[in-house]
Length: 190
Ligand SMILES: Cc1cc2nc3c(=O)[nH]c(=O)nc-3n(C[C@H](O)[C@H](O)[C@H](O)COP(=O)(O)O)c2cc1C
Image 1: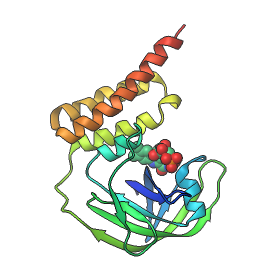
Image 2: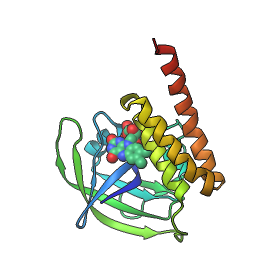
Image 3: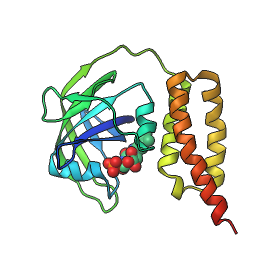
Image 4: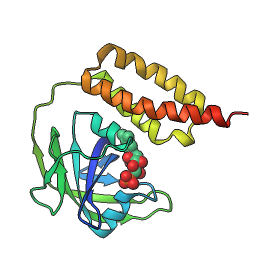
């Protein structure tokens, strides 16, 4: 099972790095699998610990892909790290072992602390749609245009029917990125 999460690590200068990552749940372990190259990968190699955050504000996911990474953070409780201040829950993890790979090393982690901070208010289709669009945006250069357009058309239905203000804002940030990609596409078309 994969949980779409926000992973917070520290950069070499001790500033925080915030990145959406699909965290694999394998029995009791959580596995973070960053593609090479990535800041999260470098940070985990230097300091083998992280916080895995579960926010319901999907603007954090959309923001990280649209140069809006300034989300409030606070100190973690058990590890020398930081977590998102506004999240429903978070886990603090330490790396137990690294499975190296040319493309995508896997960091097998154990949870040393978990805490809940706010109640879960149920599933919202627009939140799921924003996360799906964020994943598409993170792969724009690598996916066929027809696939991207087809998926956006489908995801838009859930947004139109169920989004609140935060989901709309996140959707619009991501769609601005899609629009720039479309424009580039038109420029390079024969
Ligand atoms: C929901 C979601 C899940 C993602 N999962 C991963 C992942 O598991 N591994 C990865 O390398 N990038 C993943 N990405 C893309 C990264 O968040 C994005 O490319 C990131 O900026 C690169 O990592 P860095 O910021 O640590 O350099 C995901 C993006 C989204 C929106």
